[in-house]
Structures are given as C-alpha cells and as structure tokens.
Length: 263
Length: 263
DNA sequence: CGCGTCCTTGAGCTAAGTCAATTCGAGTGG
DNA sequence: CCACTCGAATTGACTTAGCTCAAGGACGCG
Image: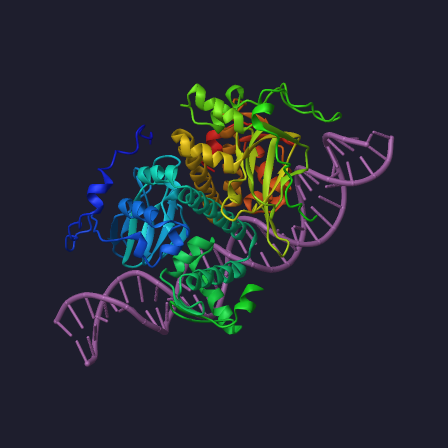
C-alpha cells in the first residue's frame, strides 16, 4: 500500500537504444515489457493525436529517440494493473482498450475506452502507482513513453510541455463530462451520448462516423455508463424501433444522429 | 449571465507587488482569514498543499515573484465561468468553492467541492477556455497563478514541474473515483462516502475530522452525488437513526466512521 | 419579527434493476 | 463440414430504489 519513495529507476541511455533494432517479440508468450523497435513518431499515422503539430525536425528527432518501443497486447490481456509502479505513459497505436477501476469490495467500474491515438496511464503520475487496470479489447499495440524522459524533454521543448498539460487537462474535462452523464442523464440519454461520442472519435481518427464495430460487450458498456447490460440492450432495441439506429450485434450503424442527440 | 471574456486584469509587475502588502479589501466584507499582508507562498499556511516540499530558498523566491496576487470572492460569486478565456489556475487560500458544469439543455452537475489548499481551473488548459463555473460557497480568497508564467517556471524547476503533473494526475484519479461512485454505488453509499471523504480532507488541512460545517446545501450535495436533495436528506436522517452520524442542519458530527465506511 | 430559503418527512409513482428463459453466434473439435 | 459449446445478447415479468409532489417546520437574515 505504501508508495515507494523513488519511482523511476533511471532508464538506460535513450540514445544507445533508439538506434538499434530491438529483438523480435518472443513467440506465444505475453511477457510484460517485451518490446519491438522501429516505431518512429515522425512517421506514425496517429501522430496528430499524440503530438503537438508545431514541432521542428530536430525536435521530432529527440522524441523519436525516447519513444522508441512499442508493445503488442493480445485481446483480454492487461497493459498494466492497478498498483503497478508507474513508469511510463502509453499511446494506443492500434486496437483498443478499456480502463477499469476496482473498489476493494469487488465493485468494478469502466472509466474509459481508448482507441488508436488515445493516451493511457496519465492517472498514475500522481501517486506513482497505476490507479486502474488497462485491458485490451482486441489485439492491440501501444507506444511506450518513459515518463521521466518525457518530463526531461518537456523542460526543453515548450510545445511538448504544453501538449502534455493539454492532454491531461482534456482528460479532466472528459471525465467531468462523464460525471455529468452519470449524475444527470437517463439510461436512454447515456446510451445515445455514448454512441455519438464514439462516432465522433472514430470520425476524428479517419474511420466511418456512421458505421462501426463495437469492441466491447454490452456488459462493459453498461459498466461504463452506470447501468446493467440488459438496460443497454433494451436501449439499443428501442433506438432501433425508433429508426435512430441499426444495431446488429456489435455492428452499429447510426441512422439518425440528430435524433439520437435530442433523445 | 453572459460571461465576460477576461475577468483578471493583468496584475502589475509581480516583483513590485509581491513585496508590498496588498490593498485592504473593500469595506463591509468580512474576510474570513488572517492578515492580508503580502501573499507569499513561502509563508502561506496552505503551502504544503500547493507546493512541492523540496524547494530551495531561491526557488521559493521565484515562485513568490509569480504568484503575487490573491483575490477575494464573496459567497455566491463566481471566480470564473464556463467559456471564459483560460489564463490562470487558482489555489483556494481560504473558504470553499463548488465547480459546476452545465449542459446546453440546462442540466447542471456539480463536479467538485474545493476547500483551502485545493486547486481550481486545471480543466481550462486543454481548450484554452474554462470548462465549468467556479462559485464560492462562502466568502473566500484564492491565489492567482498565471499559467504561462507557471509553465516557464516548470521548465526550469524540476520539482515544480513534477508537482504540477502530480496535481493534474491526482485530479484525474479523483474524478475516476467519483465516476465509480456515480456509476456503481447506492444513494446510501454515496452519501457515506461523501462525508468520509470530506472528513479526511478537513483532517488533512488541520481541521476536525469528526465535526465540521457543510458549506453547501442539500441540493448541491445531491447534484454532486447524482441524486435529489430529498434523498440526501433521507440518508442523513437514516444515518442518524442508525447512530452513525449527528446531523444538525449543516453541522455534521461523525459518530461512527467505521460504520459509515461499511454501509 | 417576518419572509424566504433550506430542510425534513410522507405517499405514491416510475425508471431501471433482477431474475429467468430463449436465442444468437463465434470458436472448437470430431 | 457439421455438431456442440459457451459466452453474449435479447426479451419478458416482476421488484424496488430513488424520484416526484406536497405539506409543514426550522432557521437565519434584513
């Protein structure tokens, strides 16, 4: 329970590592911390989501030197667990995750779903320990960003510093909105808001805003929205009857976004 | 109703002011705090809450040069409003606040209560606009911390940089826990958790953990906990019947903290 | 000392939860 | 390729926690 005083074992010199190809992933096993190289931010398709837009070439080079490793996570496996020592933050490069907080009495709550381009692990900085479990909803890949090194970079690179503040602040705002949803909306409104929000995020990442595949179960959605899985299912059916939605299992087609918005 | 764009007149040169006593508060107001002399972080009784503990004297001096102004806010007045241009973050020096987010349809939700030592305004960094209203629950005083200057300081002062990350991360964790509360707990559990949490925070600030005065109405509590004011009232009465609590209007005495915890 | 705000309590209602019975569908193994 | 299995999803019937509406009481402030 007691937090360790020093939480960041100095990582090895970034420079030496970044230039080398990292050994291939061991087959089959899911060892934490296995990592592979060749992941340059400067060429990443999700760049716009993770980085400030106004970096110079030399600044990019510095970043590439630090964020040199990615890690594949299979569906159902955890990227980190509540209580793990915090060392790095992560960016989802491909796939998707859920973050789950657990109360000692076993109560569970999904605090968020992260898709490609989203950040993970920001909640660990405060206490030096991860505060939730991050679990892959499908086979996924994350970029590993050692936080101590990121902090150092931010001290030299103003746009990067500001960007990190913005990311954290945005997470605070996102959570405020979710609190509002949980505190004031009906089940119907929550589900509608959830779908529209997902749609917007998919669109922002270049996917279809109208038709998409849910990676999570009804139960996980319910756990995120503060309701039971049966209620989620009923709302899906209801929206379908009202011609707002076309839901076929996990495939969702939004028929009337405006209608959904004013539920 | 319409928020003014900026309600913070650019403070005069920090250096000149920080050494001078700040002008007296307008007559009539009964400001509930000690001497209004220079607002130096280095001598502030709430220091431990706002600052890293390991600053050198010269580092303190730099901070004192930036965080030079305080602002009194009367009960019911707003420190900032949703949509205001973000410029500064704030530390509550005395008194207390609530933060309220509002949905376009008029739905309102209280996202937090802040007491002395707490930070305000972290949610504005992301978008450059304040995301909620901050309203004083009693006559209060805040320290104004211009964010651009704070960022500059953080680039030079590693402990301060880390401290800001920690504060923001802790806010994310706090909100996660509140989401869990809203998503999974019964009304009874929410109220018990709320009271114990307040108690803990008062204790951490040197006030009694057992007996305290609520600054907010039942309605505001309900709005924070996602329930109606009548339900809040009923839970107070229930706890009183069960000898867990002694509630007399806004004065609360916690009789059986352990009992409350396992409700 | 009178008025408005806040709080308490009761009675009945309703949205969402619980429990249960099918149905669907993606994998798995013969 | 089909049968089988097991988790996921849907739907219905019934229950209940918390909401709504209403009335009365307490308190604090001008």
